[in-house]
Length: 215
Image 1 (tube, rainbow, N blue to C red):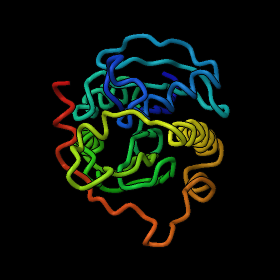
Image 2: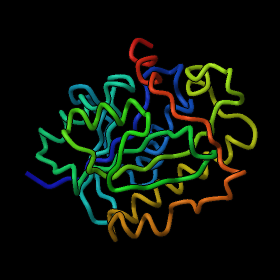
Image 3: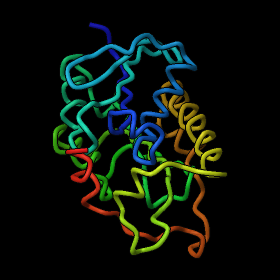
């Protein structure tokens, strides 16, 4: 069986969630499909997948259909069937409310950081050693705002244009990671930290994933 890289964009299925903050992973997958003429999508168990080549590497692009907080079920299904080593051949793309809009943060391992999609992936894979690209969607407009409404909401104005560029940069980062390794991608594409006063300090919410499971 061919050795594939699995690139999983997280999000919620359903037209009502298209383009929402929580679905930035899906948007990056769409960018990759268009840019590299990836075949599909076709249904595979709990995901929609497409196969192709990026930077000379065979890839499977996937969108879990499980809703956000059960993303690990779909990813485990794909990596198990295709005998993929998550440590070296899995890249996960997710939203991050603790990063400013459009900022990228690439890591080769780490905690879920309050993101229930990542938490479920870690649970099903058994460890946290897989590459992940987190894309900033900005925090709640004020502390009293409902987090579910925020992450299920859509970008407007200049934020929408910023995110369109972020999807392209994330696709560039993935191409770089496949060609030259994740360390190179981290060096080139991780957004440099800003001064503390400019960084969104809203804490991550543990319950976001659960809110999506029955959406």
